[in-house]
Image (cartoon, rainbow, N blue to C red):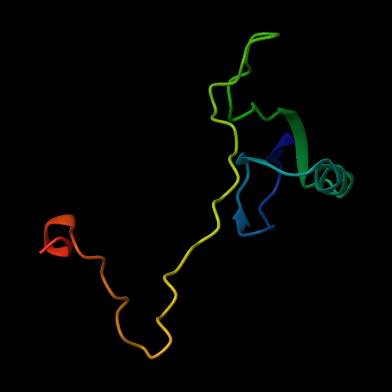
Length: 91
């Protein structure tokens, strides 16, 4: 995205005063320049640092979400019967 500098005061997504620099799209920069409102002064710096060629990204890979599981209610709405412990079963 090019950075433009206002030559005159005008409104474009808010008030732009003379000398103010702001980024706009290529198309908008050309239209504002053709109307004599701005001069194109440069390109916007990227917000992210570039990685070295061939270097792996430090971002974690995206993992597939596990399906959500819910407990099924027992037929009559009561709790599921519990298993008896081995000591109680032999008595």
